[in-house]
Amino acid sequence: MELLRVYALKLIEKGLLDEWHIWDFTRAASDRDYIRENYGPVAYIRPAAGYQKIATVARGKYFKLPFMIKSDFHLAIKAKGQSGFVEYVAGGWANGRSAIRRLDDGEFTTQERSPESEVFAMDTPGIMNSCLENNATINFTDKGEVSVSLDGFNFPDVDYFRKSGEIEIYVRGGFGHSLEMLNTPPGIKRFIGDIGLSAPYFQSFNYYADRYSTYRDDVFLKCDDDIVYLDTEHFSGYVDAIRNNPQYFLISANVVNNGICAYLQQKGGSLPESVGVFESPPGGLYGSLWESGYKASKLHEYFVEQRARIFNLEKEVVEWDARIFINFVGWRGENLRYMNIPQGDDEGMISVQIPKYLNKKIAVYSKFMVGHLSFFPQEYKEDPQKDDPGKIDPKKIIALYRTLLPV
Image (cartoon, rainbow, N blue to C red; front, side):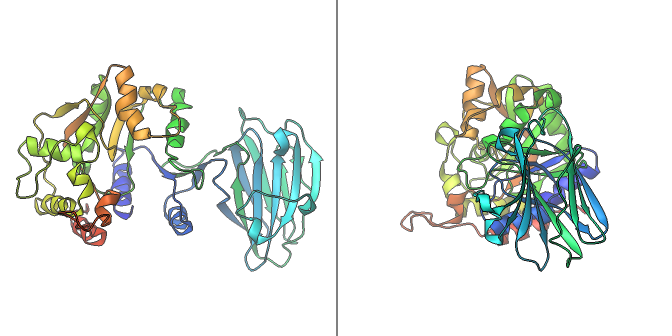
């Protein structure tokens, strides 16, 4: 994502991109740490996303947190060099009760709790309201006591952090309720998906579909995390193409290392057969490029050798009536009306199934080039007996694309 970040920030700087939303569906803790440290404040936390750090508060300071949630707001406080943590639950038990718990470090990543961990509990029916802004204030006093208040309700003070100079604040939702952070600054924002869920991407589509009235007039762009090149000069032309062609449900960028795009690039005379032969993948799915790291490498090398010139297609906007890999696609915000999709094959739903019942097609825009690093079969030798068992070398390809980075 390092190269993608450079391009996204350049587009934001030019005023061509309003916001970049990073959806964190990572599985490894190290990847989650990398995203947290480099990609903006948390804006949204799914119920099974776990605790997310949002602030560090020094002794004698306080922190205010505006948020929205229907029930089960969880706040955890840790101190460096001190074992265990304190957990506050507001509006738990179907928005009927609130509590404070003292817990061990091993319980930080779980949701199982024993009654013995409670040091305070009180009935607080109706304390949360999903239609209104809730406000929490965490105050770390000069004496080392922590006081937490929430919209007029004050938890009892705790004094477990007297030896600490600062505390760390973490939050999460829980038990079916997502947590939405308010007043996050524009620019880059993080959205945290449920950890360990297979095919989790429907969560991002659902988020925007549920906020249709907010986003209906915008243009949405969806891109993979391994985009290594983006043509900032022709970006606005791509956005205009999406705005001006409502007959298409979505429009793909002209992607390097995408089976359908490679086929159309060669058909348009932009890719010589010396680079490779790129057929139309059956039904738009898989194909020889998708499974060949060797072909992908040759294609990337040729594109960089050409200094990222546009691989013209037969037309500026080429209509496509089959599935397409959604490495980099865009759509008009009004199409969110149909994107409250179930868990499953999100790519098939938005590129084939939804356009089909709406009697619409999709398209590829010729004048906006994007580089997509790899598909998973290109990275691994699944069958050494194949004629083309070569795999892509990501570090080598990324190094090539560094030469194209904007100044």
